[in-house]
Length: 319
Image (tube, rainbow, N blue to C red; front, side, top):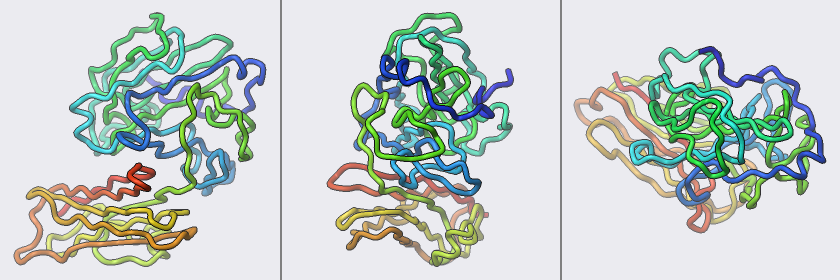
């Protein structure tokens, strides 16, 4: 079956305001924002190539991103099961439940990047799409009526993703709509046009990028991608770096790494002053005899007063 985001090429238009006034969304995931999940990326409101802007004129998006990413904080949550919920009453339009949960994204193309997924149609031409579900977890069939809050499936690792999250998209007809701000997507503004029944907290602070490196990188290297390592020799240091935007005084950053033999390090860093840009890194030299070969997982976690505001998983293969 060839479909991913069925309206990826669609014009990003303003939804009819009268219809928007009567349509509201429930939260599409069985988790708690700031505790067990967080909003990782919003719809991109900047049409310029190579740039991104979220609905509030912040940077918490990706270039050309056509949805909202609700991310989990642990791969273990896939095994435990986090339910994906219908955001509104409707009828199941289409499903796909055939792709493996594979962090390496083998066999993923532009046609199936959404992974295992559900599309639900709603009144007045509204349509919601739920991507990256767990293989074998989808509980509904095309043509089935669903109610707001009904379980559609569970978060997985299918399609174009290397970490557990739900990619949620909203359309009206062929127009992509940002549920946080239903104005034109070519602009950002602070407005009260959210379609969520219950407000979802927003913070301008976000992690722009994170990764593994074999040295402490500078900002130029991080921005160019030159610091990033997908593979590393067993004799090289293992360093996790993170570049954040608009962090506040007192925010707590935790950088950690683990490998085949367990935890390598966990470092807490209190950010001392509000800045538009923060780059932090921490690592360890290779032990005598080198690192064991295999897959290594790094994490960058940013919290504020105990609430999660940003998080990134990173991976490297030691050869």
